[in-house]
Amino acid sequence: MPPALSDFSLPDLERQLATWGYNPAHAARVLRAYYAAEKTVFDDAHDTGPWRWPAGLRERLRAQLPPGATSLAARQVAADGTTKLLLRLADAHTVEAVLMPDFRADRAAGCVSSQVGCAMGCDFCASTKTGFERNLTAGEIVEQFLALRHEARAAGRRLQTLVFMGTGEPLLNLDAVLAAVERMADNRLGALGWRQITVSTVGIVPGIDALTATGLNVHLAVSLHAPDDATRAQLLPMGRRFAIADILAAADRFQASRGRPVTIQYCLLKGVNDSLYHARTLATVLGARRMHVNLLGYNPTGLSLRGVGYERSPDETAEAFAAELRAHRVVAHFRRSRGPDIDAACGQLRRRAAEAEVGLPDF
Ligand code: SF4
Image (cartoon, rainbow, N blue to C red; front, side, top):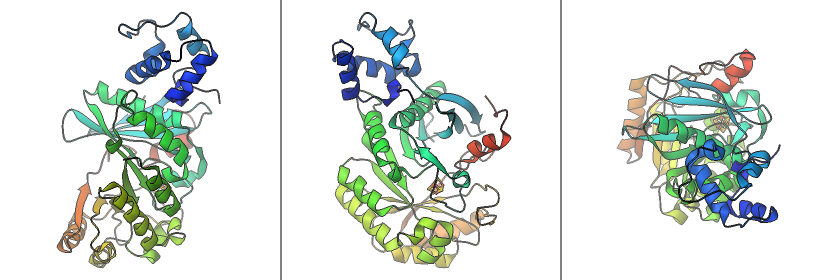
């Protein structure tokens, strides 16, 4: 695939400009303008303030380093304002990114994907049904961020936080994820802030340790979804590879190095993992850890790979589960269900678009 400007870090572009005979100092201006204005940076009408483009640079970039390699393939907007974007990549693969309005009227949260498809095989997830296709590049992740920020601005909101909870396992594409995070968090570029970014994992122990070793001050979320290894292995095949005790030990190491609580993600599935027994077991497993449990409602995706039709836990069951956790001094919150009237589950829009083959919904 030909490179795009979104693939370039600041040092990368400095080197490229030097190769073309330009002062490398222009790289910071170019990238700052790109991150501030997204793909309009090459438009002749784009205002770069007092800085002026060196002669011929804009034309050269336009010809050899286009601002982006993705285009909008589909867009769905839910009644609650949740906006799901389907972005088409240069090789015609597609990937999802989601903008979620915050309670505060001027803020929004974004969710990005790290891979095309996913190999993790979580039985309740639509993303895994088409299998793993390839890792995303750092530039393709950055472009999701820019597309979401564009959506947020159009809605009068500021993209305040970003989570890697879309399709894919970010810790299995760690180099690209970290390169993208560095650009999105950099004050001169994306200016999102390290602490506003959450990397979510299904529990890849070496990946958690690798993230810990980077020292980057991002937030970590671990998708547990079950309190015991047997239940977890049914829901997440990865559970057979890494025991809950080992995952939590790796999360402990991350938490100790950052001093901020790790989030435990737990998707409540009716009759599968939502009993009071499961809640008590989860509380026991977490013990005295200062971790926060995020309880998620399930958006059904049809029959799973194993032929199971998972259902959302009823509200009263979910409330009782949370109360049991809290009774055992576990901090537990519900994460609001987003966009139930669109293809809200991870990978659902992409899969439906692929199945339809022709015509994509809601441009
Ligand atoms: S839940 Fe996440 S890790 Fe699991 S299959 Fe879906 S995208 Fe992959």
